[in-house]
Image 1 (cartoon, helix red, strand yellow):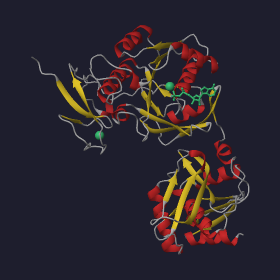
Image 2 (tube, protein in one colour):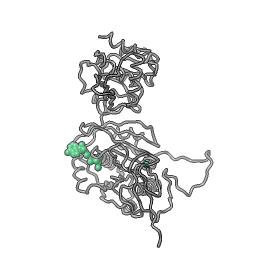
Image 3 (spheres, rainbow, N blue to C red):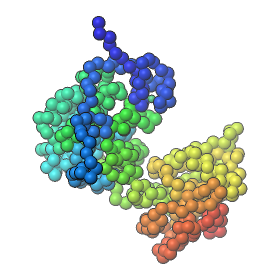
Image 4 (tube, rainbow, N blue to C red):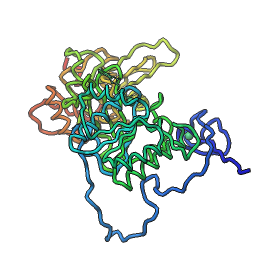
Length: 455
Ligand SMILES: Nc1ncnc2c1ncn2[C@@H]1O[C@H](COP(=O)(O)OP(=O)(O)O)[C@@H](O)[C@H]1O
Ligand SMILES: [Mg+2]
Ligand SMILES: [Zn+2]
């Protein structure tokens, strides 16, 4: 009797072993191994990166490149993160929490592409055709070149692709479809890898753009596999606060463009609407008075400066060890800033809880926000305020010096556009600027003094 081969595969990162393991040696996750039966696995004809295996070496000087063909989605914020539109023949992954709006934006995209006489195949593995029809009616999408195909079997999907020959394929979602060449269940690493591989072959061989939806688990990783992120050309995360109306699309990997670009949308009953002036959106909930513990920073998100409010709360701790809680900024970054505040400014925080929150549910991971975070904490601890018409820009070094930041003009322009009157900036970025009052600072203590003496 032929032996049935089985492997244990980490459902998080795709690590394979012959037997069960409690903890994955690759990604460190506990209890992530699932047994998957392997049968008649076909040799791969396309690598995960889309390289076909019947190629020959060529001289670099003789390689011809075709123009990269891009199709605009007619949704400016979506085009922005794609690097100027969908690249023909590419495989794009859109990942996000359930209910964030993945199906909505892709149905809208499908509708827009049809307006350009593109043939779109929307494979729905989670919702029925009538459910999608209802959504399309609400979004006012009406198109005669948009095919809705409720299907979960990859082989059937492939056959229909051959018949319809679409320009764009949307798969909603990768975790819900399965290939019958593999016996493990839909959503397992082997299935996702196989289906993604088939879709990659279709994208590269037929030059069709394939957009794949992936769900995200509670801890923030794409459910199942990191494997998926390695295979596709572009990875886009859909973020946002489900309880608020705006949504952020962020590209974290792009073989055809800049990463760390963001697109900002507002969810409405008519679907996702591009937000052209995000700073208005992020700052409009802010009170116009100056309050201790609040500072406005200008963080670069991709190529666009965003003004965001940082809030800090500092108070005597009831616990044996004080708490450091952050929302939207990296905790280790905060710990470093607190250490500098203690050592170089003499602020005693050893018995104080410190909470730091970025308003608007966005994440700031740029060092230029350091000074804003430090001032929010310091002003709250000393019960003084940063003037509400002031923006704070600067990176803090370990000896308390303020490092220059990139694109200072762009940031200051954005602050002027949003009506700010004053900017505290690194001394090395000092420039002549007549539309806003500039306060150049060399050290963290100078910035705190500037805030205190302004009162
Ligand atoms: N009638 C409606 N009016 C406004 N927003 C709606 C309406 N129906 C659904 N939504 C929004 O659409 C979201 C669901 O979007 P969907 O594209 O199905 O998400 P996903 O595919 O990411 O799970 C809901 O969370 C809600 O915000
Ligand atoms: Mg959906
Ligand atoms: Zn793992």
